[in-house]
Amino acid sequence: MSSRNCVTATMPCARSTPTGPQWLTLVSAILASGLFAFVFATDWAAFAAFTAVAVTALIVARRTLLHPYIWYTPPFFLYGAAYPILVWLGDVAPAGPLRATLLLEWLALATFVMVVGPAEARVPQLRPLASPSRTVGWLLLGAASVPCFLLVSSVQSSGLMNSRQIVSNSNLFTTYHWGFSILTFAYLVLLGDAVVRKKRLWLPAALMAVGFGWGVLSLLIAGQRADIFRVLWVSLLMMHVLSPQFRRGRVTAIALALLFLVPLGQQLKSSLVAGRGAPSTRQMGAVSEVLHSEFVSASQNLSLVIVAWADTRYYGQTLWWDLLITLQPTFLFPNNRPSSITTEFNAQLYREVLANGGGEGFTLVGEGYTNFGPLGVVLWFALIGLFVKRLYLRSARGLLAVITYVMVTPVLMFATRGDLSNIMSQCTKHVLLPVLLITFADHLLSRRERLSGHLEWPGRLPMVPFDTREPAPLRPFGTPVAGRTKPASAHMFRSQP
Image (cartoon, rainbow, N blue to C red; front, side, top):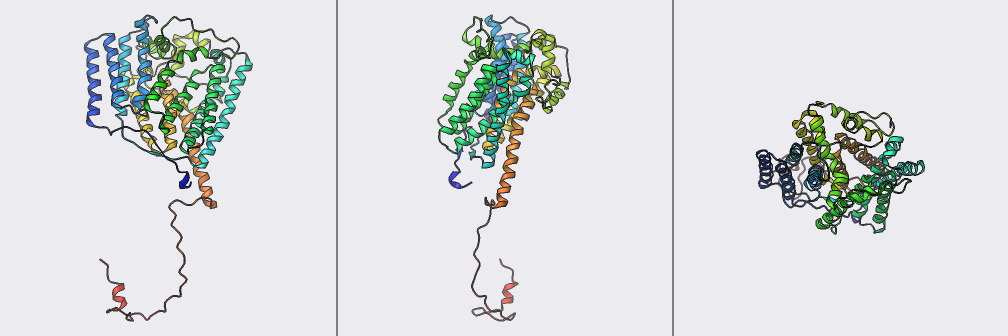
């Protein structure tokens, strides 16, 4: 790659390195909020403690949007606090102890915050991807479009009316829906490379049309709201990284606007197929509608876990289930899906919903709790924190590392209302494997081009022309040289200072 095409982009970074006051602020907030919640043993005290940890994490991160405190803490707080808030507003009937639910959410967030740690100053220079990487990105985009087209066209022609019927009456979702995740990754790779290379506006605009177009079709036909919101989020975050026009304030405003579009996405699910669902008949305010349409299930399920599974302990068995789901290519065996804690939960508490092809999700906090109680919550979120911290620190290594990190963020956010298999399976199959494919192809094709002489070897020394002058005649050994007072042999073997 020539130096003329090597355009760099500076990624936003934290303003300062982690210091003692930042750690002191975090630890003080966690200890003080925990003490407050246990001294004043009320639901509101537990809610105040949970809120204090979330707000402190946002303040310590200093508005660095790529830091996990910024993009993970707000959705986790909404998932954890939605059910208690709706109960207090009278929109949802209480199903379990609110105080115990909020304390477990507080414990999970406090563990995550402490493991990840405060922001660090990083200003990496992002360079365009090599030509082989771009080639693999285009191939992935084209290949992923095939299962996306098959899913959309099959649902359109099958007479299935909504996502629950798709799940209960066919294997279409399990067989083809993975294509949307791969397509989003390929789209983000090509978009990031195009912006860094400062290509003309038509290429990023065309890529956005492809990414958003498939996301909209998935929403309107297949009834999958997460696809379009994933494309919106990763595009927004990536443009903030690469383009100075997308500053923190603008990104925050757009993210809040997207948050209030969640109920609209719920009403638009499968609206282009026959038997479109009727609009929601709930009479709620705007905030209640947002919380009920997406965020209530995680904390409500945790309350049910505390009540119904108070004495149930799996002692790590769910980790084995998560690993089997991760290793199995589900699209090849749609009827042979391994067991999971989410399936067990819905089979016991939502039998009718599960029989009709639906489900109420689960809770990532609840999975840790059903294994080892409160200690399991600490272990689960310590593992998640270590994983996120590792990705965050490695995102400074280049454009592909940043894309990988950005692509993982929506997986982690949505997994709050699922289990650990959602993180392990999607990060492995839909992010890690494409990254390895791009890296391998880049290495292989670049090596082939170097061997064929199309590229210069890195670190190659400049060519020195041969000396065509006639060599000086040889002298007998020990013959004095003009201008020297000693024989040449004495100078040849004398050690130099």
